[in-house]
Length: 605
Image 1 (cartoon, rainbow, N blue to C red):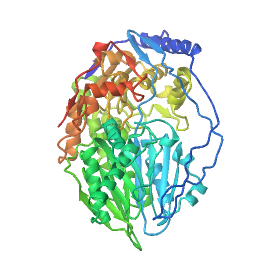
Image 2: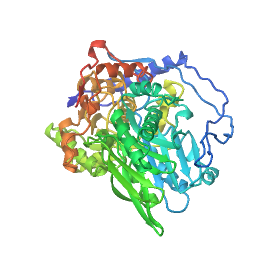
Image 3: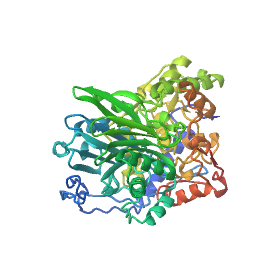
Image 4: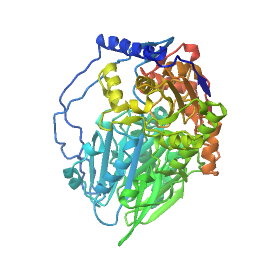
């Protein structure tokens, strides 16, 4: 997929694209001058929920009183002013966001919390809105969770409080539910036995499961809108039913049977780690293996120690070595004495999310026996081949990545084409996230503070910017404008992924078709909106071919955000429409004629 546009050469008079970009910023500023964005501040408790519970064997019921601290919350109204872009109307939207990262550690001796902290830092790229850790010291659970980055949520005092040699940790971006600290993970139920759960992914039959819990007979009350709390209660409810119907089963058989029942009831993506009183650390993965979950091991003088994590990049700093991926439909138990027991609870087939390798995971991770870095290098080679076939390699002076995720593809692309690779965009790592800024003009300035275009690189050059993906396009529009203002004579764009046309319903917060820039536009129209001289997308067939070459055992990847084929088999147009009308998709969109909205989706069976 390619679009090439022609602009006048850069001169003392601004070319059409530069003039249009400047006008867009003026329009945005005028909109925000009259903006009625609501900002309300109030003091409240910190919602720490830093609790410890009664001794195991007794009812788990009381939290330690949280320390109250004055905190300010900023609530943003619907600041979605329309900006005229030559026939297309784009609303101000927040950036594409990631999902969740999970980790669990079993140690023979010593505190698990400091290593959980280090592991969460390595998984921080998967979620920046909240963090939580719970530990177990053979007698009590100890918990700390709150909104914020890992470094802000946990202090030295917290680490001292979180005693215990076993624990689980979570970083979150809310793909389902809300921004309240109450919805930060881990989640807890006190019956049966006492269970903590963390979850990466997204259930697609949450409403059905809520109704089922309401009529279960065990009186389960859900405190949040999170699908993770639903998943926890489905698992706890299944344990109750197994214990009631077959009390002769030992506790390990009870847990595995409950997991089988949970997998039979839940649809969607879920990689899960739990801590269960009197049982141990119990992890399982959905039958399609959509979201990653990796097992690591470390030898100590007292025996084997174990770690589960979303990505094995978390293992290095804490000395664990990768053993293998948890298989689709499999459950793995680390008992209280460090023994490991695994079982295939339901039949599974590995259909991992291909977007993990493009955008979500760190390049130093290996997921499903595929090196993220090596796959991204091959995507760069595939892009280079397309550029060469189209004859664009003779029209470009240099390759420049949009930091950080596109670097491997850009490096290999430049090498394959024999073109200079240049770091023309410098990233400021100390700027906050742009979507929390109170108005559009401030968000635009924040993007420009986050990325700075170097005139010494771009002056009078024909540049090809390489990005890992173009989802909503708002940031890329500003980057193109910055590069032109830095002196570039031509600005071409290359995306290492195909056009994102459909919502990701399995745990990435881009649920609305209307907010995806490529969902209703041709490549030429997207190029026009972005203000570029040309736009090249990776072909989906090339992407899948590259991915399969790294693990031929995988016969199908979930590429639903590119082709609308959802591997769980339960996603249709009515589901997507309902999703858009909920909070996850409501109010964040690219306006388009109704008839232009894609309506055909496919569900694999």
